[in-house]
Image (cartoon, rainbow, N blue to C red):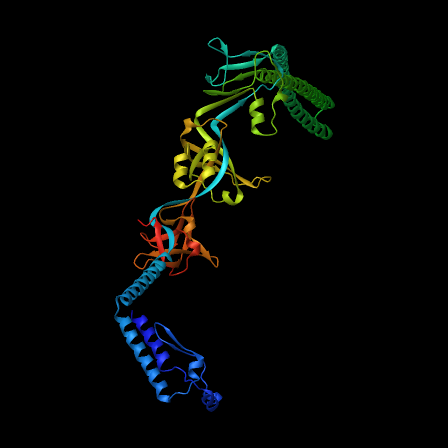
Length: 548
């Protein structure tokens, strides 16, 4: 209504006050081009008032134009005032305020949505272990590969309840399990025994000859001693007779005795000399007998030695026959269970059937009988040299079967899963001090102490050995650690400000699903485990999981 009234008044003003006069020729000539007015527009808040171009070309007093402008401005001010106080304007203001409030809320909401969602975990003290991993083969700690060392037809296999021996049957130490045809070997043994007996008889004879020769030698030596005594006695008698003869000769020269007296003593001296010669001959004869006796003794001794060598050879042949005969049989060396049986009665056996080269399976399939004692099991394994240096005796070991290992490998494995999957546990029994030249590996033997009944001889298993552990370590998942400039950091949650703080940490033991943190965090704090790669120090975050 107000706008319509203003429009009508403006139109009336144009019609009456600004209407052109009838004659305008002179007026047009009086008006200068600079004084001409173009078509003008007066703008109000509600309407534009247009003044036609031909109306300003008329000649009117100046006060009329001033009055018109003032009038229009006054009308515009009145209309603006009315519009400010109208209900429609209030509604417009209310709408603007609502829009401003919505914008503020939107900004607040935008600020909240700007917080990055993260998953966190609480730092706590727990057991952490570092493991080395390897594959191995289960085997009885006490076992024996039993085979024939000679060729022949298998003539006997132990019977159990009327049937032949089978895998899984228990046997006792000393029981005969199998044998091959041994008739030829028994004949060889009998011949060796006969040769031994003959050699022993010859030794008895040779020993008697040695004894007899020794007796003759002793007698000859005694005769030498006797003849040597006789020789000394003859020499003494000769010296005495010679002395008497010399003294008698001197007396004869002085005329004290007759020549016949000298002749008597001369004869005595000559007799004594003859006895000395005879005694010397007897000594030589006795010494010759000694030499002869010594020769006989030496010959007898050589004969005895020969018989001894013959006996030794015969006994060696006999022993060889016995051993060869024993090679025709397989006897249980201890109480145990038959693990593998690869022979049948009537088969022809030859030692070349055993394949000692190649993999262990070839050996298992070619050896006649494998006997094990199933109360103690070991795991034999080879570790890379860089892992083997960390392995020591008595370290804890966890054994997982291949089937369970394949399931675990599909989804990954953690310490807790390892403990639950382990069919058996044990300790490192021995570690080889050398490295195999071909594989550059260290041989390790694990002695099992639990779960033995769940394993089988020859089974392939995976083994984890705990080479380092800390029972009360501060540990976090590996993905909680981020590396910046090759340095480890974690993002710790500030629960009051709802931001994260980047802290440099010192790593310790690297477990299967945890990492030990030696410094940089404290028990009870929350660290980011997902979303860390998008964070920087002071980033606002929203915990979506784990903040308990």
